[in-house]
Amino acid sequence: MSLIITGFILIALAGAPLFAIFGGLAVALFTRDGIDPAAAIIEFNRLASQPILIAIPLFTFAGYLLARSNAPNRLIRLSRAWIGWIPGGLALVTLLACAVFTAFTGASGVTIIAIGGLVYPILLQEKYPQRFSLGLVASSGSIGLLFPPSLPVILYGIVAKTSVDRLYVGGMLPGIMMILFLAFYSVKVAMPLERIKFDWGNAIASLKEAKWDLPLPFIILFGIYTGKFTVAEAAAITAGYVLIVEVFIHREVSLTKQLPKIMRDSMILVGGIKIILGCALAFTSYLIDAQVPNRLFEWISTFIASKYVFLLLLNVFLLLVGTMMDIFSAIVVVVPLIVPIANQFGVNPIHLGIIFLTNLEIGYLSPPVGMNLFMASYRFKIPLMRLYRVALPFLILMFIALLLITYVPELSLGPVDFFFPKDVPVTTP
Image (cartoon, rainbow, N blue to C red; front, side, top):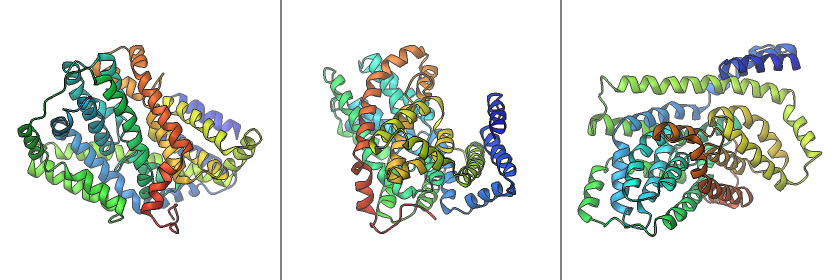
């Protein structure tokens, strides 16, 4: 077995794609144990039969469509007109706009380029310190990952076999708390600055301009949190609504020239995600059959007996993972190993999911290779080492929020208990 794993590690270092590593490992290890390698293919069939799977292409398509339209500009103008007058108003605009946009696109780098590129010059123009402005834009790129319709939440639910609906509800308060921590800091920094005067004419004009975009987040939040429709149904509503608004009402995306390319680009991403998911689930199936998580738990339990010490070490481990891997790879690589171990320590699966995703959210901003830092460095032509320094205050605040999320499980589980009956199981079939 060690020779097989060593061989695939060398193949990975040579640049082989992630799906080939997982799929090849699953087939090789099943064959070594005398099990028909068709067992790996069975996982693709199980994946295809999951109703939640349809949400991935629909949400991805909607996110790509929003990114190619003028929706980010309208969102910025609307937020600035209505809350730009309060202390730190423009910083709050940045936080809210980035959170909403990241939730829909699921891609932090896209948020920094699309929203950050718009607000960074305005922040400087309004006399916000450059260090603060850079840190704010870089850190805001991932703060919406816990909110619907965030794609990483769906992927985590599929891999961990945990209810996506409940994950979205469980992420509501932690996500809001993360934004509030950064918002209080932003207001403190901006207190000496001159405020933008509120203008009713500008506010009403911005509201009229965004009248078709504004209802979408509220429709999704209301539908999912009240149980009026499932995540898959929310995805269909989102894709259909965005298509009608951007193509036929605003006419910012050409039906014949731009739309086919957007569909192709978004489905290329979806195809890659689904291939990786299928191969990862096949590898996970082997790990479970070989009782690898149980053996890991037995080894870990010889050193750690406390659930709280386990959670602390888990956070340290996941923060390191977040600095080295993108969130999609981390989900398919790490989740199958930690979920069974966390269950043995009595960690609620919904709580574990929020802890995991929050860590990866912070990992986007963590040196040395946090993706947000690289994207901000590329977009604003700022040396990476300088971004390490400006990101530090935001990292500290996000880490404090992470500790509260970890050790106050009611933040995640309270809303779940409120919106869903106690007797409903938290795992999907």
